[in-house]
Image (cartoon, rainbow, N blue to C red; front, side, top):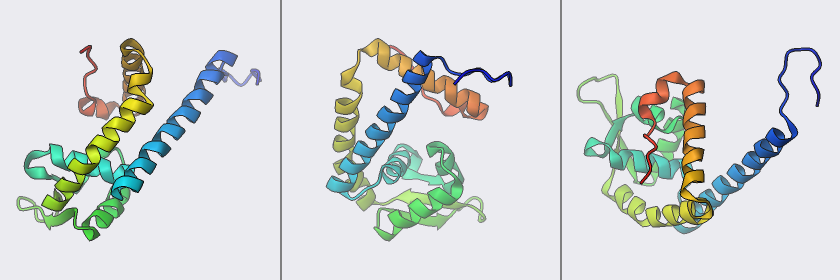
Length: 167
């Protein structure tokens, strides 16, 4: 496509190839990670991420609003996902003790056990399908690219972004 005088800065042929490769690769990667978690542990990728966030928080619990912000999903999507996890006995919800209007999601012992069982599958998948395929400099560049995109799209998320450093 060429410029039509509308001021649109069209992608170059090379940029278009990179963009389409990103779409294909990221879709296939996320689909594979999801399939591996579902087949081996009965968890979706969003469910796994919620279990991870809860396991990393103090007391293995977070207010629902904080949980939604930590996984960058809408509150309603997180509510639906937590409802499934709660039905499976992996998470429980309680009223926030310091603010009776808030709701806290807490990782149950059963949820922690499921997470411990699923984590090697997920980490092996991330390594095998992405990390170990590229050199460290390229992988760090991916982190910087998506940190820049996240900050531009949501300047408030900068505090939640992990710092990318050479190991």
